Length: 414
Ligand SMILES: [Zn+2]
Image (cartoon, rainbow, N blue to C red):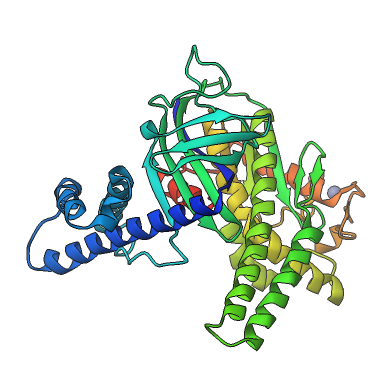
């Protein structure tokens, strides 16, 4: 099976390279916005624009303006390609009408993979060679899978498997993302099934008894820091240099928290996809609908609930990402995800099927009031989910995740 995946690394550009990056993203943004204006304005008057026609006009523009010519033509063509795709998405009803790209928000440009190469310096250090800009150092935190047969592992000129190289600025600095297309072996579907329960004390509990938690304390600390920087913003004058500094700090802290969560989700979903062929999880949407009416499953103590509410909100933000990562990783291995109705998964005894909120003795303990069955509450719930999902009837298999959703997730997780 051929898959396309993004590999993102932190860049360490020199100050001159940083200036080039800013210039290149600025020019590509201007080209994008000009092309968007052209399509919007003259499109109404009946003129038709295509990727190819706008590329031809780009060539004329480059001869006219030096500041456009400075930047690689293929990078500008990639911007036109993005716009073309944005229009296609709009007319297919997948997205709204494209909006102009904005400074500070859209600081990125993409280069065709054929024009770039990379080489390894040390174990965790490498250089990516970009046209006109030169070699930029990046931290090689995980191997790039672009080696074609016969190439040594120290990097090689890109083959057709590297589609593109994107340079973008986040709140944490510049980063490089390699879009790699490669073949993965389609492993035979393993029949081993697992149920996963998401909880408050433990982010995930497996029906095998494994418990795992996202570093909540770390995320909460960053959350507090984020609030502090926001307060500093509020005290400062809008548009001033000090305001910009506080805003940059707030954004960096937030991006860091998101990165921790993303890393955790990638690690855990990879481990699960490697072990199991069938994964049963709760259908989150149904939880949201019933939660307000039926109350929460946890101990009805006030402070517990408040704390749980905070934890839950942190976890819920990550749960959708967890599901998405798990879906594509499982699918790549020929497995499946089964979503089950989560109602009563934490209240129903799996031995005697007695349903009562009193079965949940505490946050951590499940004790059936009818038969006395005792188990860790989250693991018990995971086992109930597994049984509900693998029962011959009453389960729902989600369709393969659509390419569109997958791509959108990838872009937002850069
Ligand atoms: Zn029971």
